[in-house]
Amino acid sequence: MPGSDSGALARSIVSRLRDSGYQAYLVGGCVRDILLGGEPQDYDVATDARPEAVLALFPSAQLVGAHFGVVLVRGGGAEVEVATFRSDHSYLDGRHPVAVEFETDPRQDVLRRDFTINALLLDPVSGEVLDFVGGRADLAARQIRAVGDPTRRFAEDHLRMLRAVRFAARLGFSIEERTFEAICRLHSSIRAISAERVRDELVRILTEGAARRGFELLDSTGLLADILPEVAAMKGVGQPPEFHPEGDVWTHTLMMLERLRNPSVTLALAVLLHDVGKPPTFRLADRIRFDQHAETGAAMAVGIMRRLRFSSDETRRVEELIRNHLRFKDVRKMRESTLKRFMRMEGFEEHLELHRLDCVASHGWLDNYEFVKEKLAAAPPQSLKPPPLITGHDLIAAGYKPGPAFARILRAVEDAQLEGILADRGQALEFVRSRYAAPGGEEITPPDGS
Image (cartoon, rainbow, N blue to C red):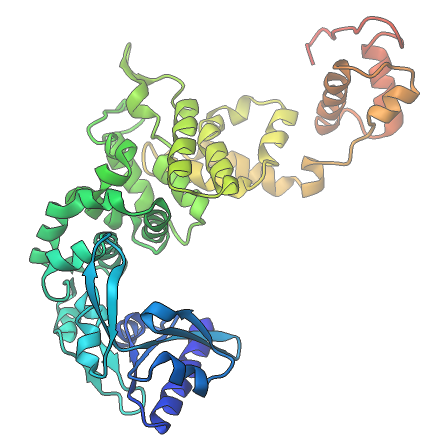
């Protein structure tokens, strides 16, 4: 396991630093996770050794944060960050300290950290925990509390407000009262943080196993309206009770988020944003309606993801998931060729899971989900996208003149192939001759319009 490899490397680093006369401890999230009985995914070491001393002891290491005294040590396929004790001074941009000072006292190092549960030091040899800020008591009380004055901590780095939400959600902790109040006062300052940093925290909130709790906290602190106003707009938007007995669009979305299990980033985002088009398309007619909300929502999702600097591939996938999420209501009426084209879409398993979550968080009807699952089980992959029976070259060889009609002809042939009507090249060419004029003549439109 990556965490186990990193743990072994971290312990060996601590031993070597101590053998050379330096202080060295495991620090931060890895200590928190160990004390909670878990296996950390990564490890960090804090020491009074200056960066140049660390580099001398580990010649293959790499200086990755000269200003902050951070050295990356690799070994056995793992890597560990080794940071010199430091204190930070005069934050001016809500992220970076203007000056740092290397320290020899570990107490000074932990006083600059974000939350008490992340400010514990562990001696991996003796098991002794150095706790200068009450972190162990907060672990026992299951709460997130800022180190020192929460207003000052969040003024130093505004992103810490999102981190407080993420840790509270993932660990199932509460946010300590003064820390929570500070976030509620300062939430609008999150707008000064770069889109990339906000994006990364949102992705973690969505994928670390407690997305509903995370978004409820984002809402209650005021952060949601700052970073995702389009999602905040879902609150209070009613839905037709015959299809959505659970309530408004926000409640429906939270219920879907609650059911996510180890989701991909794109599935999690599609769940969050699949109904983002409902607030702007809401209207009352014979019942509540949301005309073209899938198309509207897909366009809105593209705008949101571009704003948050997601990759073009992730943006395209989420757009497709949202644009197509209502198509499942028609699967029983689709022609075989249309259904097969639908099922062979890239990442169709995400489309299917989005539909399942949409159903279980509303009316509970899974008939179409089960229908498609059965169709997929009965259809080998090659039947969904078989090799083409003919190509444009075959049409040219048969005397047809290249042009826009080629695409329609080849699609009609593929439709018939997917329907099981055509099985070989000869049948395909005969199909073309029977439905389309002789070479050089006008195209014949078949009676069924295919």
